[in-house]
Image (cartoon, rainbow, N blue to C red; front, side):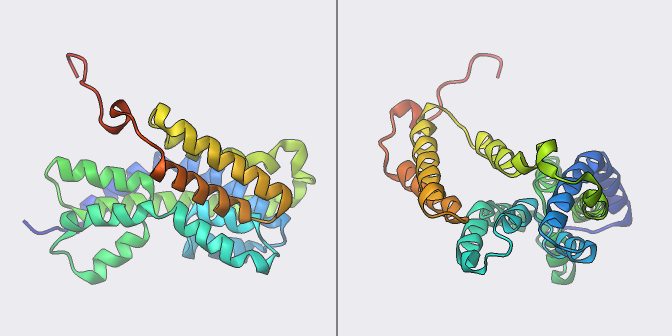
Length: 241
């Protein structure tokens, strides 16, 4: 059965996306405030949120804003941090098979973690209406862009954002991402190595190179560290699971 794209599915997905609206607005407001702090206009910040539509990439770009010598480090770090979308796209391909490229590729532009997870649920349920995926992605984008505009427009009224703790938002955001990658004790060494290398690099090199250095060091530690049998394979599930 070929994939479809219906108005009913789009409406259902968009309404599901609105359930995430408050969180996307809040996230967008923080990005907008920080964008205003580095001198980006409302139009510039909103355009970035529309055409980039990637919170991780946009926040990392702000971290190195005004330092063109760090462009390579930022680009490599963004690619590394968002490489999961290559796998997400590969998982989507069989589900979207048969859909016109003129619909499939624009729909993929709207991919975020939330609507990808929804698409996989639709696939497992035997449904192939790609419009649900696109509608949910657009609903999330509306909240993200609205929050960006509000944050950039009114952020100047807040004055020094450090007194509100917004200067800590970026490291806290990436720490939360790291926690999401935690799978067990076997991840201790890569996390520690990556963190220490990032701290040392930030202390002696500066800029955003610590993001790239820490990521590479942690990845290499994970690749070459010996893994126990317990770490290499999941143990038996308890009864009832």
